[in-house]
Length: 383
Image (cartoon, rainbow, N blue to C red; front, side, top):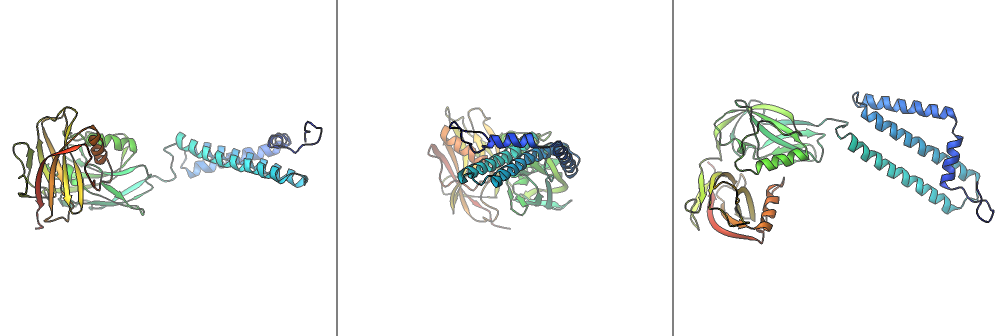
């Protein structure tokens, strides 16, 4: 115990406790500590399937725990022998120790995630439960369903179709909905191959990391995209089944042209269409800095549904697109198809909407848009 400037004994501080505890630890306790670290490392390796990285993290945790345990013990011993230690000094000491333990725990956890991002207690698993293997699909609106386990919150389940004939991959914007109990469903899957005449495909459930998902969205925003020869890094196949696709798919029939000179009837004249409408979007080049967007307007409820059908200054004059008009059950419902001109601010809003995982519609168009043309359509009644 040291003395203060007046020559009186002063209470030991945290550094004094640490120095004395280090000097008083016998060599045999170091030996026991080494054995504890080795045992923890071996257990970590066994539990992690033979991987050495968890052993490193386990050893660091044991060392930190031994250090804190020694400090706790020394602090408690000092407090027992010196009844004159002020309460506020004890409280401050314990606060510093506990705070140090909490900060160290967060630091170790963060360091572990940064150094070993691929180390997980359980590998992600994904299973396709519907359709079944070798099933025949004849609906454009067919919803793929399945079960997933241990998929990270940042990752996505994405469904791809691979042609058995060519080996190429076909994808549509991800519309997979996850439920807390691991169930998931994915719509719009068939739209990527609805225009083909091939029948045999491999349906692949992918676990997609955020960087890979960003790459796929950039790829899908290109209206003239070709099928993929290979999947991006970070898009890992988790389940594969063989399916047959019957053409033409119900709900995907007929093609219309959206153009300045011809197209769907304008005004109040109603054209009957299916839920998914293949269109050829043909328009003159927009003004400088502007883009032309196709937007579906639902009258009940009143929502604007921007489509991935965009004419930019540099895009080709004729674009093939697929419009989604309403939900599967909206038989007989009227909609309006709008051609809108959007400036820079509106373009950001519309592009952000298209890139979302869940797209429930916009309650109003961005302020920097101008409606150029309106087409009224009605969904065909159920057969």
